[in-house]
Image (cartoon, rainbow, N blue to C red; front, top):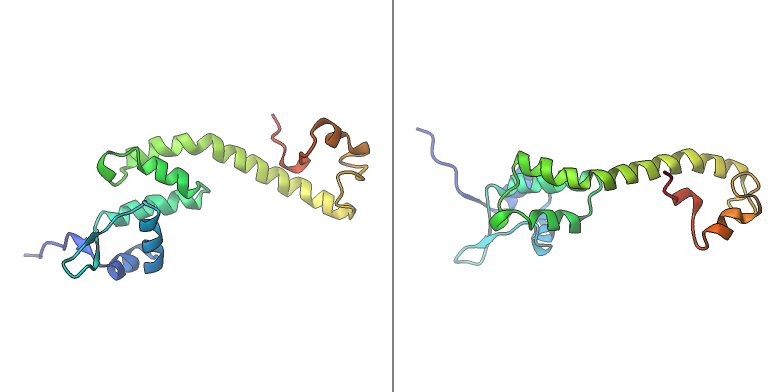
Length: 151
């Protein structure tokens, strides 16, 4: 008979399992993204399902979701429950529009920046090719044509 796995992991066990450093676990805990319990000797122990919660956090951060948005999403789950696949689908759908905007902006930067660097002036005030007569500046004071959201 196989013994039942321990319900809690030490920080080093969770770090090994998640691929994160112990300092990252402590950071996520300070940020309210994960939690631990304390032993009688005041040592941290993490519930085993924290590994799944960390996978959720890492996936969200990897696609560009800020930690504050991840925390807010996790706070919508009952009693700090670990996200399920259905939770991920629901929460990630809420991030889709922002990520699409970010992708469009990065694509524009990639495509437009090369042309700007080739000309050498790097000035929106003097650039005859992309901003003749600083027309953009007149229409959008303090704006940046490379960061503009285009419809």
